Image (cartoon, rainbow, N blue to C red):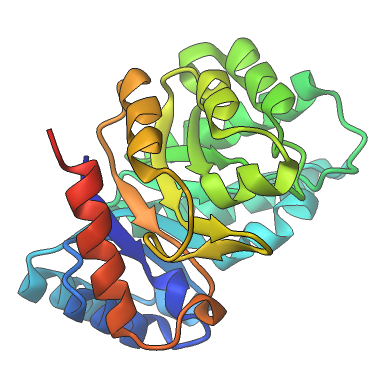
Length: 261
């Protein structure tokens, strides 16, 4: 299994600087978290591409900042807004494809949205089709505060959409629901596109791998049972570590665990 780092670890550092620093820590697989529309500009994207080329690195996925607005964009009762938002996300999908990413991370609707799962999945499927047309995969993340944050809802998506749905497994978010990673892996049913990796200890649910008490080899075993081969992206908050070099240490440790035979 390949292990990398998300630029989200360094927010609010500017995305280009964050990517450069992540690459300096030895990451050869990255997730890029875009934080502004200007970062979709072709000149900016070429600078990111140049950094990746020099480091011999690849982008596994991108995470748009508009994830915070997806409930309103795609799951309101206003049809024209949905159509406009699909067109807007086509640009996001095109950016992902330009950088060679395989997946775009999707949060979806907020938890309290009174929408049947069948309707939610119909909207998701239409957006996923647009992603496929641009050459990438739309991947639903299990965000605790969102409609598809729990095992029951993820299992419903898997049942309704079959093999036409992919997921991002965020182990931190599983902790926040009080459910188990084992149950979430089973609910995702072999359709995990990537994993957001973190560690945890009592009172702190988002630490760098190795800084907490999570049984990471056991996590590797659970993922292997699902046929998952990677990537895993270290994704923590900037408050989760002090020195940038800690990212390198965490990456080295996680690589030894998840890449071992």
